Image (cartoon, rainbow, N blue to C red; front, side):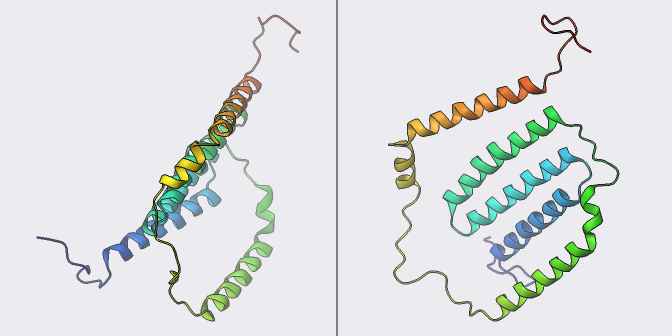
Length: 186
């Protein structure tokens, strides 16, 4: 028995429910990033936020953007940030954060931005976003051919530089041992 197009009792389609679930995950995880007290958990919430956003990109039919989101932002930048935090800092946040003294101006700015966005969205005519002269989707083959054809060397050089940066960060984060040859420790 196939699934109905509309979910009984709520009257929404499956794609609408999936979008609402992914949007809810994005918002909840983003709040976890901003309001989290543990910096490692905030980094993991950032990865969850970006992953759910990649799911929304897939729903919109932008698979190449979703793939780039996963590879670049989740696979490289977020993991690099987590490694940098874990290697160089204590994971415990201070009791009183410096930006907590600016709650009132930040709340006022947030309310003003919400009003401006509401007015802009309310006064916009929302028509179709696909125009009659939009070319048909060709998939990822042309993008892959362009990136891995003439720019393959640039990608390889960038990967070696990132690897060198990670190794350098690990080296800088290492604590020297007393029995190491070299300068005396204080």
